[in-house]
Image 1 (tube, rainbow, N blue to C red):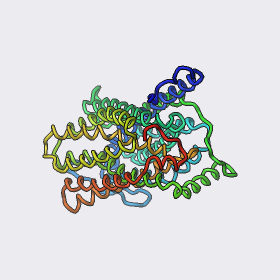
Image 2: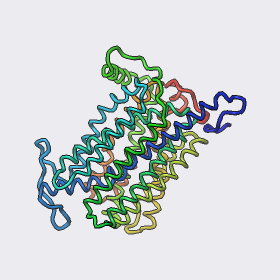
Image 3: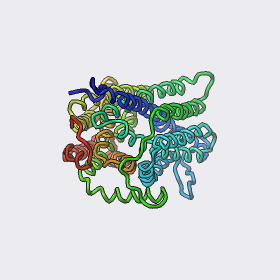
Image 4: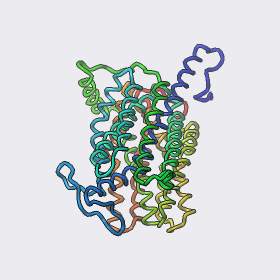
Length: 466
């Protein structure tokens, strides 16, 4: 069997330029994972929430709270009383819900456009400008932080919808697992490198910087990184004509809404695709909750210091680079469907081991982090490439918008379960163990998906390995 990324065999030299052009586009495409991961890791995951909370507390109480002095006053947001400590979470939730309605329209419009890379880059640069504006969030100006956080998160989601759809234009059925995996791997590497630099800046405070200025500079660096590296895919990817999309009469907005309702109505014609999407919602929600609650579990339940947690975050980032590449190689032999199922099994094992993990056992904690890193990038990358095989031709951005919107619109289920179980039991151990339900349900639904049937139902050619 000839490798999917091998050049054309001798005697078909006329295919050589096409092969080289596609490989060039794929290499350029990888770099958007590298570009946007800086925002995801440095800003969205690590620095922005605690910094925004501190600014909000200064406005509400006149000081930043600590263990000795808690800020109990509320802010007023659109006439509602909001705790400063909940401000960042509420902003993310609002952006998530709003994007669930907006992203399908973005996808429908992108499917009708011959300038997908322009749309992707436009949202990326708009998001990076909003992220850069976070540098000016100082004093008590938390309102600017809320607005820019909302815009940046929304633009990130919109850019990813188009970015994921472009995968179907630049990679054939046999290439997508490896291409998607390489993109995810590069993203983890880039995000981890900048995060390491920024955490060093915030921790060491060189050049006489205070913590607030170090955080603001770090967030600005992530915004610049996002904008600058987006230039690579913008210049390296070609715009492709829309495929198999019947245009609704009227303007672009009418066409977009028409395609959106048509796709939602047609989902019943692709039951295998729908089953996978529901399965993905469950197991991905479990993944996201493990990642977002890991630091809380490590600090509150296992008793680790902040320095250990920071080191663990970086360890996961860099191990995930290799994990994504490893899963891509295994999928080339076994098929992405089987490998995702194995990944879900490993995630189930991770939450079970976490339940029994002894307090302050740093060796086992780091070993568990390595396991998370190995499976993290792989399951996400292969889920993206496998879903790309289940989309009817010409509706790539539309379906990926549902993929993104559904993920964002339900990604709070796991966090709610985690919080409720902790509230009832007053322990984080049963809370982390409860997340196994999401992996079990996701795995059971994924078993019901017949890959060959699903791909054929969507009207796509079968890859050599399914």
